[in-house]
Amino acid sequence: MKSVPTLQQEQAADRFARHITARLSEGEAWLPYEVTERLRASRERSVSERRREAFALHTQTNTAVSAQGNAATMGSPNEGTGWWRALISAIPVFALIAGLVIYNSDSEQSMLTEVTAVDTALLTDDLPPAAYSDPGFIQYLKTSAPTSEH
Image 1 (cartoon, rainbow, N blue to C red):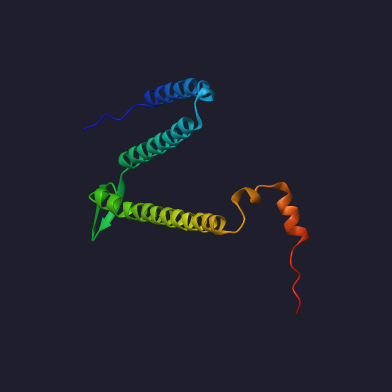
Image 2: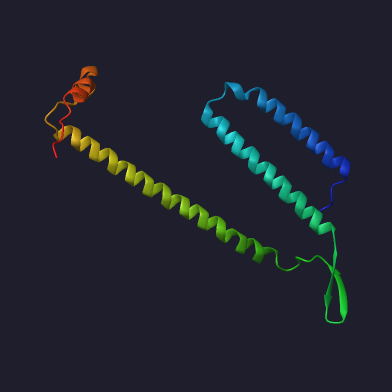
């Protein structure tokens, strides 16, 4: 059985974590953006894991009285359902991840289709591609726009 840390031990661990975080933050300015984003994500995961541990510790130490028929029993209200509840709560997370993957691949495909259409139009046009980058070409298009007669 795990021993429950005392309040002083938890406070010492929190002070140590703040000290390490401060030291890491000092050198963060010199790191590339990708590395700082990975560090930020890792910190968020660590903080959420710490909160989950604190919540689990809090619910384990508190006991509840539940009525069963004519008898009252002492115990944790979540006894025996921990792994089942974790499995059920993971389903929306997996659904969200699957949705994000599908959305990402769909948006990449549509963006690729648009780029392909533009490239095809440029390459099959009568004008050479260099004409489109000419500053005078936009002015030419504005002044020689065909007028529609209805």
